[in-house]
Amino acid sequence: MKITQVHPHFGAEITGLSLNADVPESVITELKDALAEYGVVVIRDQQALSDDEQIEFCRRFGTLQKSITLHRKDTVRRLTRDELTDLSNIDENGLRMDPNDTRRSLQKPGQLWHSDNSFRSPPGLYTFLKAKIVPPEGGDTEFADMRAAYDALDEATRQKVTGLEVRHSLAWSREQAGSPPLSPTEQANIPESVQPLVRVHPKTGRKSLYLSSHGRDVLGMSDADGRALLQELNAFSTQPQFVYRHKWRDGDFVVWDNRSTMHRATPFPEDKYQRDMRRTSIEDNEVAIAAEPVGAA
Image (cartoon, rainbow, N blue to C red; front, side):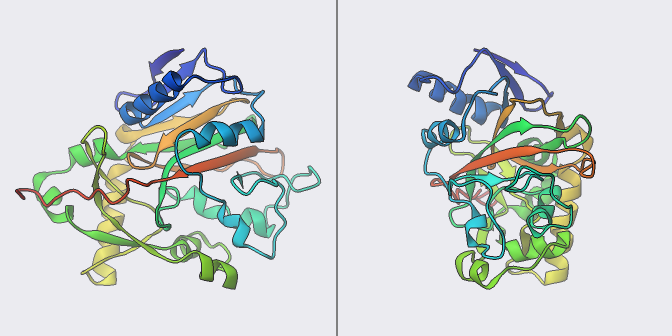
């Protein structure tokens, strides 16, 4: 197994590793260490990895989260396993979806900068995304290093943001993206959550901004002031120097730590190409390690 850093701040490519074999526990430990250090790891050449193997591999990192698509009763799920989220434009008949299909419209928030499942309690820890079919143009995924962004803040801004809490809502990101609103079943099963704006990674001790398009307002601030602050921080942390743009290849298996990174999908010509991406995620049982206010004992 070879690990090569792909960006000055974060991100690594891993070659020489097969995930559909019996991966030893020592390799799982190495991968967790790599995620703590690099935030994002790209494991190449996993074309042979089946859905069941993906799920069983991910289970070794923690408690799997079930897909929120289970709570949408007006759509058909193409993938049968509850742990899989379908981020594709392919329907249950193997045909390219109409871009206006409800299932595709529900994926629009993915094109906004976000942290996976920040609206859930517990939120997402690791996300695993497998590429079965990628378009020849477009469809990249951008990642932002939220640790490097925090490190680059001036001292006054660090003082301002540390200790603040943000309300996260799937309904809010749907609204921002122009997606269908929450269904009654989603409203009943996907409540809002409150997360610290600055978190400390339990392994590395590094602080990072915890931002997401799901972040609706800042507790203790007016809606206008809170949203202005979140927009300012989002614009700052997604500057080019903090961003790695991943160009997918068939068989890529990308894993990222949602405590250290934010990400977004980029568009591709959906009227021409298919894209088949399958996601699993692990819940953050060590969540809410909030940074103490600057200068606190």
